[in-house]
Image 1 (cartoon, rainbow, N blue to C red):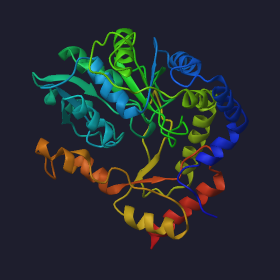
Image 2 (image 1 turned 180 degrees about the vertical axis):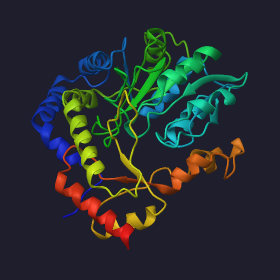
Image 3 (image 1 turned 60 degrees about the horizontal axis):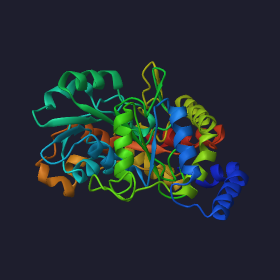
Image 4 (image 1 turned 60 degrees about the vertical axis):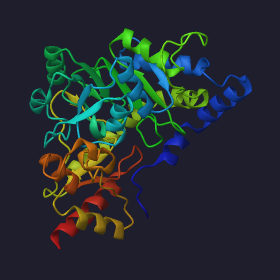
Length: 366
């Protein structure tokens, strides 16, 4: 029987009754834009994350761009980030008018390496945008210390990490601003696009709220060239139901990760979770120089898998103007060649994980 990389349908089935009622209630209400469900979700999400407030937006990419603009970042500014992440991270920096400045990643966590950040700071640097990659928070304390020393804003790209924890603080509360994506495959996913901006600076969260609606507070006076980027009322109603399940789903993902740790052969490198961190395994990513052989063996058995970010950001055609070349970020480039995401979702069973481990072991023994 096929094993999928994710199981959106299975997670929907757990919420089907509640979701269908919530959606019908919205349709019957006639309130579709910035209605009571958006307001309630913003409040409930902020309470969950331990932040002053949150702002529902149309998607995570818009959220990142608006967060930067709310912090006053634009033309001639530089934002330090990682080259090993989804394109939207650098895209948002460029959309804000700033220049992405890449720093190589830590070979164990795959997140931005704080020890390399200070050397990348210039007089034009205005912000650091760490990414909580695959569901593991970046090293917030080290990054915040560097930011404080240089007077920089921290915009946390938490798009893959809803529910993750860093020494008792939730991802989304680790920077001045933070952004989540609710793309359907995320741990907390909607049934379409959606995003959230949150963080520890109430002032910057409020500024983002203004950018969300055309740069206006009252629909009459327009302070900025803003965006039309609002979380949909129906999506907010759906997300409120998912928010009630997120801790349970993340705990079940953690159980799947424990099974992987038990059944995978020692020859593959597993995700590292430092002490004090809670990984929520948006993806379970292994590494091996024999990645392609492993992937072929899994697909022969109808087991889904996927290599991520195989062309890192510094080598993407759209960012060629930055002038990077192969070899500039060697850790990132090696990880891009070796990584493979295995099936990961709350409904994955132990026998399925055993089957995946056995298939990988067989491939590496050939």
